[in-house]
Length: 530
Image 1: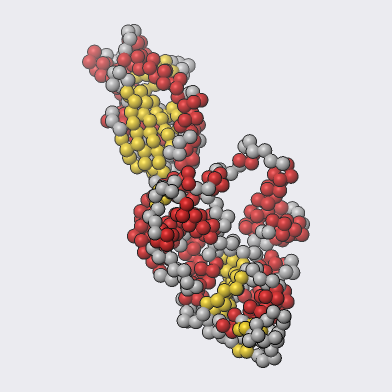
Image 2 (image 1 turned 135 degrees about the vertical axis):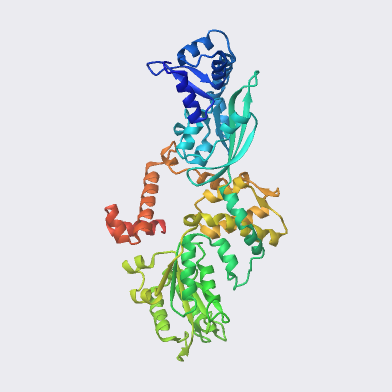
């Protein structure tokens, strides 16, 4: 209040705001000085006076500013009501409201999610302060206040995302802006999709044969765009040209079979057969007969003419042994002999058969851990693990979720003669989900949505309830959800052990970090089938 008017002019010039708070000697706000008040000062020629005197003079009779304050109080009651909060918090898009001076008064939960900011970091601050803090690149509210009309612009926010903000002014009877209501939509993934759209058009037909793989370089680059998968392909592009043994490891559904096919098709064996055997899908006796074949009459139920094993059929080609960790120990000895000698004896035969087969193995389990607990032969492990390739889970390469979704959507549209599209909200939900079943789970969901969704646009509401629930922020277990204590403890133990194994790779190191015995870790992993 005791500052000279020149100080107010200086502050207006530096900040480019339309109003300044005026405080007394106890730092209590006693009024607002607007650019309109400055205009009156210029007109009256009182530039040498103090701000407090000018403020008292402007408040000595009813003014538009006082009337505006009265009307703003009516809106303030609405803004603070529980009903209004419930309404804006139910919206998927962000809501950001400022007053007529550009000061933040309300944000909804969706804006907090999009911007990765809390309301207390925003409310009470002028938009210029938020820009200076680096939270946003520019303000739609400031543009609306300057131009007194609805404004739509694109913002970059501090977490690297791109958003579209549409600001709409609320006027009083004197055509003064009381509030600016901003609607906010995250378009980060939409922009990524736009950049990839030309390449995605080439992925219309997903091949269904045993040779189906992303052998085309353009297709590979458009889908496997994460840095982690680029490193994987850099490695396999090198090893594909040789006959070196490769051990693929990764969670179920991450695409180990697809990677194995890719290696085969880029090798000198590409004209030969690519055969696959899932070692966890057969009992030990059938795995042996599938691998090695048998002579007629070798055992009860055997075909009268005998049967060739996959090793013989895959001669001069590639044999992919999926879930190699499930191979029984007695068969591991025989497989080791095949790898060393490139020869085997069929069941019920005495003749040695020479072969020339490349073996690629894969497992969702950590084979080294199986070696440590005696469930996998160490010599076979080192034979297979010449070049280890760890395939990251889909949640570790989220930038590929949207391209894969569009790829599968186009593929199933072609297969079922439909033309479904996915809304931005649905794509965002897919992007945020952790996909425990990885690519296989994503592919199955897209097929189901194409078949059962009645409308041409697949929206967030068409997604399974468990998908929406799973995209909620972690911590719900501790924020109101009541579980039996034993079940809650079990969930926490499972999460801690899973995180420790992912980070430290071995049960021994995980046990050391968690300060329990290695046998405890192994037993719990068996219990949860980790």
